Length: 515
Image (cartoon, rainbow, N blue to C red; front, side, top):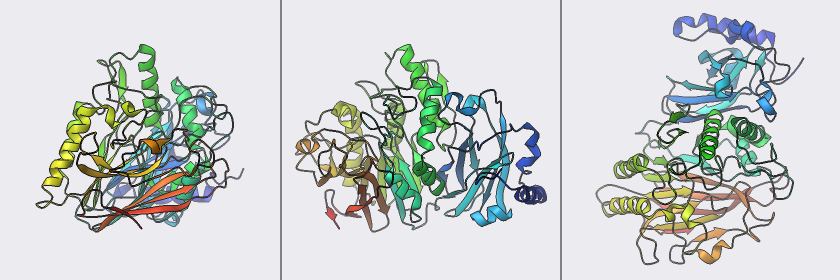
């Protein structure tokens, strides 16, 4: 049997020999030492590929999940217990093939975790590229590429993409294609990719598997199997490390995870969704922990991405802790965010949120955005305003990146929800990867803060432009390009830069200009 996933006998023996020879330096023996415990997979168990994420200067998490039939009930793993999985890290793909490894070991893929594997590879060099792969028996995974972050003192530009809202099932029937993700999978000039929510959509359409709303843990696992086995997602994750936070559709529409009145069925569904999210993402830590007080699982997902001295990216989780009317982040996370805003020393302090912070007067659905949570929003905007007032003593350049609206928007965050209030941050709302909407958004934009918005035709039609946001943050400026295409119904559709915007470090908020 031949396959691009099948490890040759010569490679097995060579890798085993290298690993055995390096035991003294701390590397584990090759995974073939555990071959007797490996199921006899008739096809590759690596159908959902590999991924890496949560990189820091000396470590990165590498991930895979065993699923020979990723969209079938049980994912093709019925009757299978814990499976030993070998992992290998080298400086380049060629070094992986030759056995010149910098780290290697074995772990287990356990059924209670959906046969997912999360390996926190430590003792790596800062700001360094690596290649990695996994091995189960004679099967080898695709090779993934990743990199660690620079040390905090490094004057290094950060270039990254921002993605949100990638529904794959078209209304009625048919599929949307992730042409923007496919483009990212071909790029070699990015440091990382940020997902700001709606990685999957939970509702049922004819194109979805299963073709109904997902509820059970197996349902969510199958839905992730469908999304993650798309060629575009396989390529993106194999090419770039990622940082991820969810929005609502990883759970269910407009979910408020802190709602004390959530029904027992909704709590169980929420826990299933969170478990599947952790199983399918390269997250450090976990799995989710059951909280008896709330009757559902929770997982800390807010965190800081520090890229040298030019970027502090503060990723927030706006779903797990929000209540219907009280708080969007919860007390602990809100305190963390305010503390990070107050203490950030980076050239750019960016907040990554699944939903916009900006105020768009009269826009439907504002209760689902930061504008529906005035106490939390005011606490944040006051903190931004305080730092801006003191920027002569300490540099501060605040930016928000968000998604959810199914529009690409350049705007400014007002300290209060009125058109006379001060501007306290620049916000770039990323476009949807695929999702569409029929809302006439332009009618609701704040003219005093508005800079641009992109729908390009009927926003509910297939001709609307969709894609991703491409950002570069350095010591001089922040640039944001909207990379868009209007052929999401075609698998070979392309994307290109439609517009590019720049904010200079030290400039007044609102001083955004088109390049």
